[in-house]
Amino acid sequence: MKIRILTRNENASDADSRVWSAYIDLISREQLCDLSPVQSAAALVFRYDADVRNGGHLQYFTSQGTDHLPSLIEALATLGAHSHREILTGAGEAYTAQPSPFIACVEQYCSTTLEDEFQEYDACFHGCTPALEHYLKEYLALNREHFVVVQ
Image (tube, rainbow, N blue to C red; front, side, top):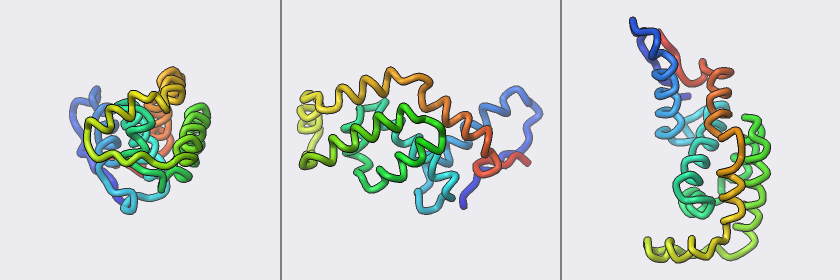
C-alpha cells in the first residue's frame, strides 16, 4: 500500500489543502495494482471524473477501456455517488453493446466525438449534483489514514 507522508507545517491554515493535494497526487499517479482496495476506489473515481470532464465518456472508454468498469461502478457506490453510478452503468452498456471504434489519431477521435453517441450521458454527468469531487472529499475525510499521514 502506498501512502503520502506530510510534515507538520507551522501554517495550519493550509493543512487541508496540503492533505488534499497529497491525496490527489496518490490517487492520480500510482498504479492501481499498488493501491489498497480503499485507495483504488478513490483512484478509479478520480480518473473517471478527470476523463469525463476533459472529453466525455468516449474519452474515458478510449483511455481507460472497460476492464475496470465493474470495479468503478462498485467504487461509485462505495463513495455514495449513486447518480453517477447510474450514468456510468448506462454509458458502459451503450459502449459495450457496439463494436469499439478504432481511434488511431486525433482527427479520428474528433470525428467520433462529433457523432454525439454519449452526449446524453455526458450531459447527465455534468448536470449531476453534487459533483464527484464532493464524494472524493467526503471519502478522504472518512479514510484519511489510508492516504495521507501528517507527522
